[in-house]
Image (cartoon, rainbow, N blue to C red; front, side, top):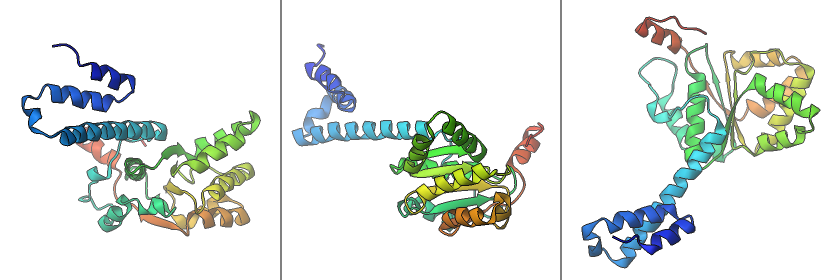
Length: 251
């Protein structure tokens, strides 16, 4: 059978979804039972689906999430302090729309980063952008950016991300420069974008970890007071997995 010339034109127009759907229709014997409008609707639906999938793939690639995690895989059976009602509420992504934050605390290995990535993944599926970064690395990048003239551009890029994950909050002592940089990042995002922070430390200890009382007040005012708070507990999931496999877990 000769290749349908319309397929070449659809590919030339980068309408690959419609081209694939047309090829499928051509191979379906009873497709003529559908009206022209119905067949056209199937072509358009396929194109929209493929474009949505490509955009999602692009958002997830840019997000650089540490874990490929989805909320649908969340295990509520283990007693980790998860509030199913709250998680289901967060899954609607209304918090992203309202530019609120999420703070996830708990001991090492209980799934803080996994949950943060799952929330960001859901936001990407809903059309929002996301980015994962360890706080220590971000602060180093900001310092380097000042030296090569990229500091304003980096701040601008961070300010545009709908959901920014700041992982491992409070693991390092902040310098005066770190505190100022962190305030700049959070000031740009306050009331405009959403931030997820994960930490082994209880939120009550964050003020002391930041160091400077005045800057600590300013930083936490932009992060904590408009945030959902999730405190995970229980045994390290890595240690639990190590027991099951007979291997030694590392922190």
